[in-house]
Image (cartoon, rainbow, N blue to C red; front, side, top):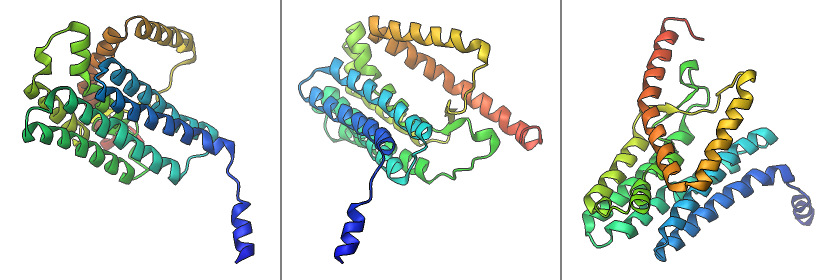
Length: 255
């Protein structure tokens, strides 16, 4: 028994394995801190921390693949973090921001959104790893980070434009339900994981990214609205691209 315990304690975990999980935990901490800001009614901080969590979420999986340390533990931790950061926290923040005095129906809208994010992540975790060729560039439904950022649009619009009608409980409930439905529906959305840029476009692409980052730093709320608008416009474009690729696959033109 003592030998078995000594052998178990000698097992070491590499630093490379730790890095992606540390990034995931940073995303979780950012989301939980956003809830603290919401309790203090610091709504700018709420949005900023959810955006920061989204950046961490985009980095953790890529870091794991780059370092070749993907694991079932990391995938489970990432999914649990996403449920909290992009499901529970935005739902509760919107409830505190506009719905807490509106009764059970408003609370049901927040619950609906949170449950939909949980269901979306459960579906993502249970999907077959080997998708057909035509489906590899697409997610099924809104990814949880995208849903979490889109559902905060009423707060951003209120901050930037100062309009109070966007805080109406009915409108906020509609946004919650719409984003929840978007997360669990089968609508294809661009994944971007296999996106490849021609070598001659690498520098212009980096310049565009630098310009977007500078714009986000200088004018965060207009930049947020611009990126959200671009993403919404890309949804029907993704559907058309998906259907075309699927048709080519059925005809045998794509393997």
